Image (cartoon, rainbow, N blue to C red; front, side, top):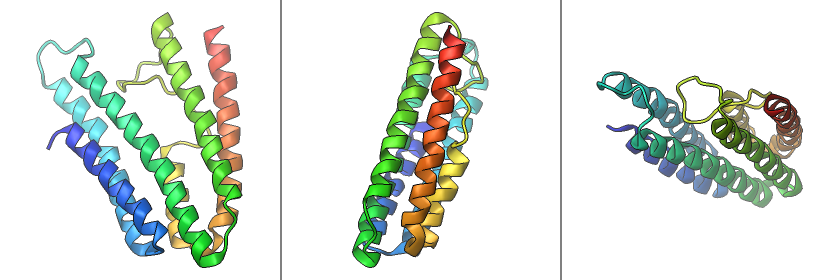
Length: 188
């Protein structure tokens, strides 16, 4: 199994989770979601392990850069699709309002923009934060673990998904603000 195949398996099962959530099969959606995120958690360490066992791999290879691109793109697709899938499911079942889910998507958009813009500019200007990953990460309140937990909560407690979305949109919005501020200061 290659890191890119793990990424694609995570993408496929993440999209499956979103589709199943839209049909209100919450426990199936949760299982697919957790499996998807497990695959996402394994692809990077596998890639770094393989790189460590190859001779002359001090520099980043085009293959590892392509894998990093595939990984972050798949993450964004899965996160967004899950928000939409849950919104469809809870609005059909519980009459939930879409607005909190739209705010989550907006917060994800702003957060992702700050994260990716910083990474790109930091790389170009030699100010990247080197930790072996493809992108320079700016820390924030809302990270991958928190996202997995919140999306899981939606699937375990769908009747409360609207309220969870309001709180989550606020936290991701604060995280985006934190990243924009830290990124701007780091690049001064």
